[in-house]
Image (cartoon, rainbow, N blue to C red; front, side, top):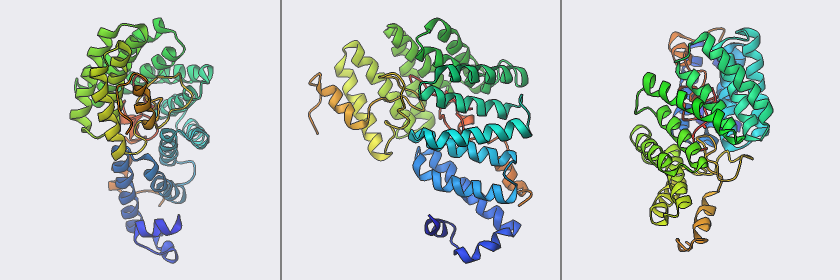
Length: 356
C-alpha cells in the first residue's frame, strides 16, 4: 500500500514531512482528486479505493477529523465499498460521515440528508427495510424543506424511497414517487441527463414488476439511448441499462431481442470488470439498479440464457483551486442520480439508487 502510494505520488516515505507545504499539498490533493473522479466515471470503483483513502488521510491531517470535507471523503470511500458490495466496510464510514455532518452542519443540512440517504441505501441493500424507510423519509423531508420540492436532490430522495417501496412490494406507494422524481429530472436537468435515464430505468422496473411490459419497454429504451450518449457505450451504467432491457425481453419471451443485449452487456463487463455484478447485495432476485441492478454475475448471464437454449457455452484550509473542486462535491455520485453514482451517494434495480 505504501509503495503503491509512493509510485502514485512520485515521492518517498521519508519526504512525507514536505507535504506540510501548502502548495505541495494542494498539488497532491488535486492530482488524487482528479484520479479518483476519473476512476469513478469509468466505473473502476475498486481501483479508486486506495486513492480515496489517501485523499481522506490528507483531509484528516490538514482539516481535522470532523471537518465537513473529511465527511465528504468518508462518504465517497464508503460509496466505493458499497459499489463493490462490501457493506461491512461501507457502513461504519457512512455512519462516521453522518455523525460529522449532523454535529458540524446540523441535522437539517442537505449534506446531512445525503448521508441519511447513503446509509438508507446500504440498509436497503442488506434487506433492513424498516431502517432504510425511516432514513429515506428523514432525508426527503430535509431536502424539501431546505432545497425545495423541485431540486435534483429532492428527486434523488423521492427515487430512493420509491425504490424501497418497490422492493417491499408496495407498488401503489412507489409509482407516484418514481413519477415525481422523473418529472423533476426532466424539468431541472433536462431530458438527456444521466439522472433522467436513471429515473426512467427505475419507473420502467416498476412497470416490469407490475407486468406492464409495453410501458416498461419504452422507458428502458429511452434510458439506454440517454446512457449511450451521455456516458458512452462502454460505461457500467450503459451495461446495466442493456441488461435491464434484455431481462425485460426475456420475461416477455422475446429471446431474439434479449440475446444481443445480454451479449453487449457482457462485452462491457469484460472491459470494466464487475460492471454487472457489483453491489448485488441481498435484494430480491432479478432486481437491477444503478448501484445494484444486476443480480447475476456475468458468467451466470450466459448460463441463464442456456436454460432457454439461446447461447452456446463460450492544511487548515485548502487553496481556492482545491476548494473549488471540493465545493458542490459532497460526492461524485450526489451529482448523478445515476451513478449511485459518487461516491457517497448518487438514482436505484430497475433503476439506480441515488445515494445522496
